[in-house]
Length: 310
Ligand SMILES: [Zn+2]
Ligand SMILES: [Zn+2]
Image (cartoon, rainbow, N blue to C red):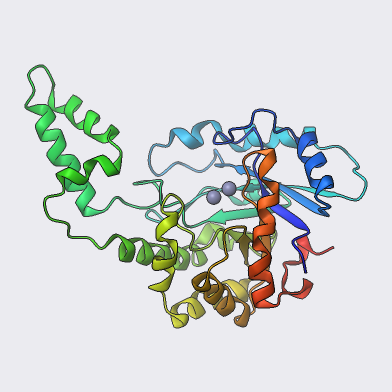
C-alpha cells in the first residue's frame, strides 16, 4: 500500500506556515499531481471557548472562528480528490487541558491531537529544573546591572533561548532524554483519560499527531523512544485502540525504534492515518516518507482509520 491520503496539511492560515501562497486551490493542484485520493486540512486551532492554561501568543490568533474560514474556500466538487476539513489542536499535558471542546470538535470532519509539542515550554511541557535554575541565575545577573529593575531582569532572562542558558547550568541534574521520554508517556496516558476528549472521541475521528515524536528535539527522538518499553507502549496503545483513537504515521518515521513502536501499536489493534505535516506546498511529497514504515509493518487498508479509507 502507498500513502494515498494526507490528513495533516497546514496552509497559510497556520501561523507557522512559511508559504503565503499555500491556498486551498494550490494544494488541490499539488495533491492531484501526486495522485492523492484524499487530503485533510488540519491547521493549528485552539477553541476559544476553552481557557488557555498559560499565555500563548501562538494560539491567540488561531481560534476556531479564524480557522473555520477555510470551509468557505473548499470547492464543492473536485474530480477524484476528497477534501476534508479538520484541525490540529493542542494538548497541554502539564495542565491536562485539551484545546478543543465538544461543540467545536463536532464542526470538524476529523481532529488531530498532538501530545508531543514539547518545544512549547511551560505550556505543553514544563522546562527542566536545570533550565529554570539557569534562568533565575541569569535574572540575578541582569538585576545587578544599574538601571534594570528585578521585574525587567526576569523578563529579559525569559527571552533567552535554552541553548544559551547552558553556560549557566553549573551542575546538570536532569537527564533530558529521560525527562522528555517520561513526559511523553505521561501526556499520552493523561490524554487518553482526559474528560473533554471522552465527550466526543466516539463521535468524530481522532488521530494522535506525530505520536512520541518530540517536536523541537528531533535528533533525540530515537534515544527517547528507546527508553520506552514494549510493555509501556502496549499499555498506552491498548487504551487508544479500545477507543478507536488512531495514530499518525508521518514522513519521518523511518527508524528501527519507531518501527518497533508502531509494531506494538499494530499488535494492539490501533488504526493509522498518514500525514505530511507540511506547512508549504512543496512539502506534500513528505508523506511518501511513510512508505518504509508501511512496508515494514505490512499495513493494508484494514489498518487505516475508516475515514481515510477509499
Ligand atoms: Zn504538530
Ligand atoms: Zn502539524
